Image (cartoon, rainbow, N blue to C red; front, side, top):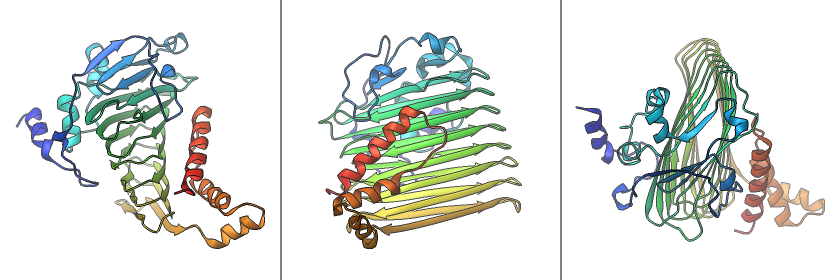
Length: 399
């Protein structure tokens, strides 16, 4: 059976995790690519202006502008993947290498009908990119499917920050977003990737991500979702070679009746590789959250740790913490901790004794709980994360 036939068959293949949905009920527009300035007025709830993005995708329309001279002189490429596949052998070689297009119905849909929209980022060897590379994806119309395929390659000895914001305009309440992302971190290179999701009720979100970190490389991933969503399911996988490092942080604020199934998997394949998976989960209203973490120790002197902490902020909410550590090498050291609790009355009373109201006390506790100091985040991202955590804390006490 040919690859295309296998992928067509996978259109009916559900994910092993998360809510299954009927993908045939969504409209897929014709993919389009435009090379022009990204200055369109797009209302964004993520605090990142589209005008500063090197790549902007509005539904199935990709827009990109010429790279600023400060990036171009380093040999950094930021173009739609569709354009990169046409022009560069490297892009053709990397696309769909880490994520199989027949993984499930969502990868199959993107492979067959996505038109290879999404961004391609290449950073030349030993380049330290001085400014974050911004991308923005907006699902702009009701009952539409937005399909994106992203490939990032940070070559040996290089360093880069990629920041992606995903959102939806006010008034759009139903749709499907699928994002396929493949990240390659070269030998002794470093990639920091930050993704902030701001969706809405009625949205189904299905990212599919894989990363490969070469010898001595480092990959830092920071993910945040703070909005209502009908369902979201993601379980990114990272493969680590000798001496490679992964730090993955997830901040999840569940809202309304949303179903959130979010996790991270690390495969420690190289001697001395390491992974730390950290998550902070707060469940409001009637949300259900499944927080997964999986580390597989395959090599000697490899180390891994999972820390998953949950806070139930509503009697109708539900959190399931699912940490898994599997060792296939006697010299691999793995550990995990998981805890789920509520806002303790004594903590509120202590803060009240310091002059805070009950709502202020709850807000302070939620804010402190959700704060994670992820290493290497750009200052702009840190400021935005702080603002969003403040918003979550304030809004949470009013629910």
